[in-house]
Image (cartoon, helix red, strand yellow):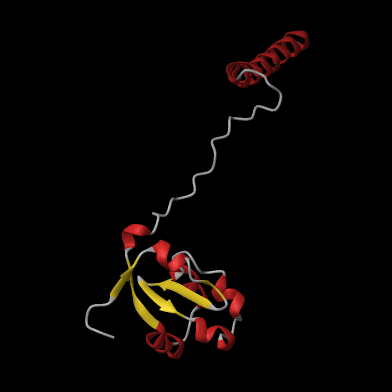
Length: 136
């Protein structure tokens, strides 16, 4: 290969997504793994499912050996134009409204949380005063 590697777009690489013609993007480089499909320990479906996208995460998640990484040079075609790969978006879960099971307005709950213990304390003091005055 010459000193200047050919630069491919994602659209060009995405066309090569079959058993007869399979290209992958790993680490910003483009690889033609068609000849390796039958020899891949994980099977050809694993490689085919990683076509038409940046397969770097798929490759790294498996934890390939240094031997496997060295083999990659044999299949290297060129580099990918990173501006053609869509930016990753971080998943943001949809906003959900606060769930109030009994539908009671929250301010009533807060008032009751204050008044009920106060009423129990007042009742206890009243009972104490009443029972003390009867026994005297």
